[in-house]
Image: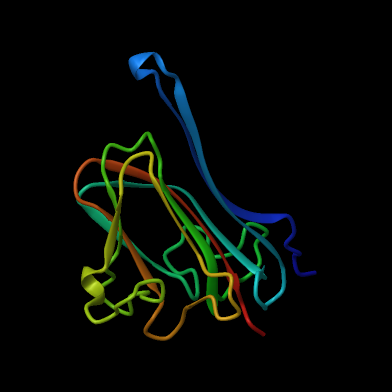
Length: 179
């Protein structure tokens, strides 16, 4: 029996309270920005039917590995968390976290063969399209449209690397396996 996906949420919140007591006058401002994405089961807009998880991926620099986002090759577990086979046709959300316990930066992107370029504005030089995630930081990309971020063929490999120190990364991918 296939698994069912429910209660799926991606969200990020940033908030701050600013206070100024200069010259005996107290002024304050509260800033708050929240982005949330609620997803349901399926293959349409705001829907997923496949999940992949990579927990505690450890690297000591210099080191790298590449994940095939289409077939999950390179993931330590090549099935979903309930042991179902997954083949991604598109990605709706991906979260990559470089844990605070890391001592090195996690560099995301720049695969040498078949790099995943869908979320990037230019795929002209895909080996140079990289994002640095510092210790304690994370990268969250979402594409809740019907198309999502395309995956497959020559657009599927996600490279993770560290140049110095050690990294401990968590990765979760929400996407679609279109029948």
